[in-house]
Length: 210
Length: 333
Image (cartoon, rainbow over all chains, first blue to last red):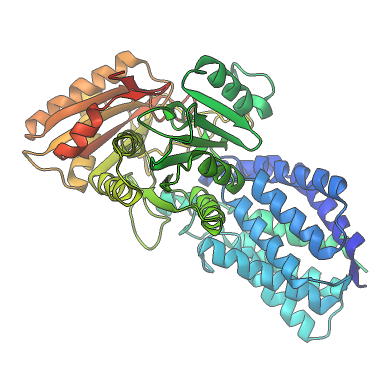
């Protein structure tokens, strides 16, 4: 399948439900090694995204992503706001002028968005952050694309890699963000940011299934 | 959870409404986007001072808006950084043509949001400079952490830089002063209990009846070491020793000292700790020239305290004595 504006809106609608449904879980993960607000902030952000998209009715895919970016930057706060805001801002740039995006474009969208998160947060693989879910997911998606996989197959493999990456944060010692203040005590806890990033990819895989 | 609130989602806004009503002579609260600004802003020709951060640390930062301290403060949700649109609007509102200093506590989210706001302001011709406060000795500063957290020294920096701006220091000079304050200030905190974020509804962590958490942050993020509760004398010695060794403070140094409550500890106990602290400092030949005892940078309803020492030069002491008129700090007016 190719992804048009309606499919993009469906994904964002699914994300609102996913973050509302996982609000408690994300907040509990954040209680262990952060400041107990990640689920609350993601839920507030994507609830605002839903309202803004309904009010603005953006013209094309890039405009939808730009609206999501500014809404998240304004409503989420913390570090998740600028990081996911930057992801969608870059995604908008990657989709400029397109009314439909094919499998290769979807991979490019995630690649530019994930690179944006890396630049904004100045984190690297292994720091126990969102990137530990997103970077393996990106590798898996590129590999699936190069192997001629369908969009569903690409996203399924991306989501599976993100999930593995999320679980792999458990034994890591945090080197960025508030969890890094705990030193070795951050070991043994799953990173909340990697978890919300996995949910982002899983929702795309579930929504954009051919 | 037992709190004096309505809907937890509305707590920050409703509290700001009360702040505006209680201190209409000193400040105004703007709601879209949210920031608190001194009543007479912008002051023409004066360097503007803006700070901000998550709510839940009151009186920091909103309670320090007023003559002789902050021109504006941007409150985020509880323990969550404010957003760039708030910071940009506040910066515009206080720019009197002499540029604006952002005083930012070192947390990943605050840094990123203030960074984005500064880019927006600079693109529009407002000169913005930034000083990041990173004074918490409980956190190792290394390539492998986000760096030291900004805690108690922020209160002292906002007072001293506010006084300097009021005296007519230009932006570069206020920035240099703020950096010097950060370089010479050190803090350490401890908790007897956790705190409860209103929207979360339950304590962020659990502490046993006879336990305390040393090196606690101001967001209920766990500290570095959980240990049996000590008597106040030993507790203060331990906290002070860590702070003193870090700068290090030496015999003959003059300091501004702060014993700060985390929000849920009675003043009776804070004064008791302060007496212990003066005893420790006197024993080391360190002179306390100015002091502050009370709740200034809190963590909601957490019980506990923090100790901040600033090695002060004569200029800092003189700026400290300048008049200040804010909800949280006022003298000389």
